[in-house]
Length: 482
Image (cartoon, rainbow, N blue to C red; front, side, top):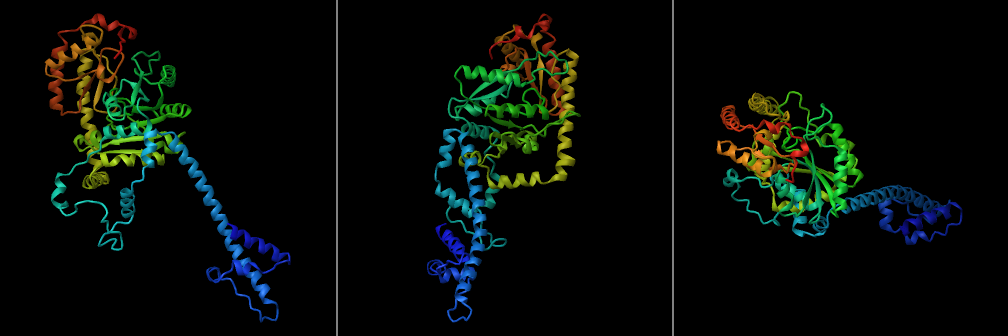
């Protein structure tokens, strides 16, 4: 910078006619002259070419350097912006996440550099041959059929919990919610869930039961903070498990604004995104709204192959975020839950077979889901059992309060075990941390023949034990601590 300033100062003095020419010796050395093609002054010139040549040379280099200054300032501004953004990204993460990011892993850096330009004898013979990573590449052909992926949605949730929260910090979650959320984020990450309790009570007949609203989120957040709980984010599934409905674009915008207003991370679990079966289903993915996120650094997306592609045992999932620090922290965790390259290759082939996906797989899956779902719903209608109309997912949320021996946790467990004794396994609302007793989840993603037999057993069991007195109970009378 000082050398540039010297040249520009000399350029100014030359223009004013007070130039001394001393800069020539200190700055316009031969390498610089050669680089910028500055003319060398000649003392033998009749027209004072030494001064003129020197002046022209400084002018030329000043123009070049001025352009470089513009680029330099632009880059510095960009670096400053990125540095500020990076600092903000890191500040919203856990201490654990920042510690992982700050760890200097030389082996990983070496791998990354080699992987940026990998050697291939045919396509990239000039690439880097990686003799740094201890990897046996000599028996890939015979091991391929036996390799599987390792990282599913559960592992991803554990990683997300570790990045967003420090131990004993909280995530808001609408209840009822997928029961394994609690273990996914608490066993290793030691994150706690703060339920936003929903009920079947609605004042507007057009609003479905168990609808999540921003006032509910606000009330739960305020209560948790008053109890000294540090809430760092908001986790939910869309489509919703176990309710089998989904959030509209307007609702998602409201939730995003709520999270942004309180500087909360918002985590979208869209593991059932493709498993729609209602004719009017229109599930909105957060990935379709990335250009309208109020807080991109705190918005994260999870998806896995297990549900939509019926390969739960494969353990392969996706984590997406626009927060570079968040992604860096997640990458630090991948050695513990990586997906093998052969599995990645097979899944890539699966996802890029667009004709098969659009014309065969997805229509067939949705048609079969719809057929089995209709059998379950027809049985419930026949028995007069209230349920939420399912639009996505493999399950249905139904109200069995009339068949419970008592309106409490124990009564719900007894009904669950009684149905189990009749050869049918369903799940009680307690498993989903539902505060309102009597609700159960039933899965219908089985062949029609199996569902038909299951519904026969369901009817034979429940017809013997109905208690119609429970039908008129208020929601308040049904609420207990799950």
